[in-house]
Image: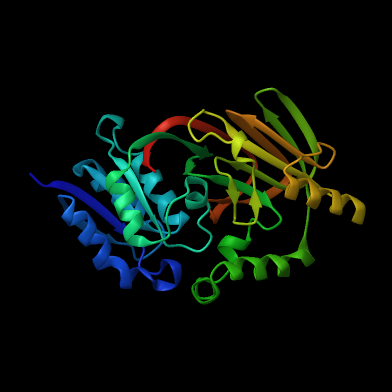
Length: 296
């Protein structure tokens, strides 16, 4: 008897490469005994709606696209009864692909499809920021606007370079925020130019965390906070600290927490998994442990 597979496809991801690879991907799943139902997204949020409404009707859900497509798919799956929630496979064809870097997934579409077919589902944490879910990062401050402010056409044409160029342009408008951070083990106050709540070893393809400190199913977030540099020497210390993954708490704070709350002195824009995540003066992030089964 054929097994049912829901294939959620973002047709514009990765410079539109999906349309050249879709037949080969479907062929791999069909050869493995799956009846494939294809759901094409047309706008942001479609993957969430598809997964929430139709995920429970399939034995397996696979998404093709960037990290945003995976994030939407996982968010939709959180609206499915846990007893009926199928595992999720991911074929990365986006721009930054932080999740695929963390999971060491192949960027060859047919190889990635075979990895889903032959892989074993692993229970994976998912985060909640306010009322919304995120799969690998929620962040505020400098560079966090890069992913969602970079025009989609530029992403398609330039790929990852688009993020770098847009990030360089934003250097002229770095601002910091007076912030109170309440986490599992205490309270931190300071003037921060960047903050990230992550469950990934790669952040926007630009910052790499020490893999030995990241566990995708331990119920804890990795928290990275960067203080506002007072001079060029501070900035150099911050850069060196991040590159060497040897965090000096005077400038860069790295910690782990199941829950974390942020309070600012003004509304601050956040990004969730590379997309606009709203503005908050006060917001809490919570790790929902082992909520999703992800194949990798």
